[in-house]
Image (cartoon, rainbow, N blue to C red; front, side, top):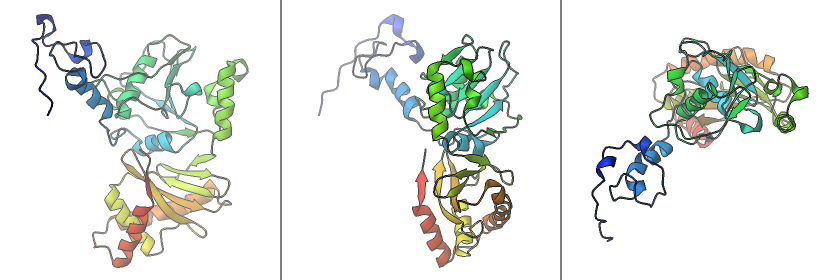
Length: 323
């Protein structure tokens, strides 16, 4: 067993120093607070915990939680106008959430002072909401025409739930490409134009349905898909889907099939395969009808039958966790 490292008395001036005022050093180096312990076992412990602790539902409590998840994980190109508590700061005419920004910038303040906040970026901690809120706050204050870099948010910093108006609607606009990046594409920088072309080539055609919340049709070369972010507790939802699947009523019509689900940011996203000829408009009626069947299945408290348990096992085995 390793000998316990003796502690040295902390210098008087450093006693009670808060973590945010202590410089970051190597994890194995002595903590600058003077405790005699390594940084990772002293003030570095709280910082490490803040980085690794995962918030399972970062968008919980925000209007449109399912659409936040869809735009983060499923939709290539979309924007949403955001409303801040207390209104916009002077010199900021608008704040817009975007799935992706050019050059993978976390945020951008345009020349006119408006702010674009990117959603599909890697974030440095386990709380996506806090990281996005930190990026947004910095974007509101940088000089116009400036992109915002990623950085570690303070562990006690605000979250999106603290900054956004909870009564404002969350209404995504899905785009066919990323032209919203550059209002004046002819005068855009060469690297931005190249990034725009690459993004447009990779974008999968996607449409947000109107017959159900957070349901998105998408087109791929071999077949089309419906991906529907649902707000229900996972176990209850899987039971309901299993009841419908065992009864032969889980499809959306001829040639369609419920093939499994994603798990993303604490919500479940059932996925259907669709014929390549089935358009988004043709999905609207069967999706509305399925929503009625699902509501009835969710209301049932009866134990699952053997057939329903087998159906549930199959759905569970085909579930993939995205985040």
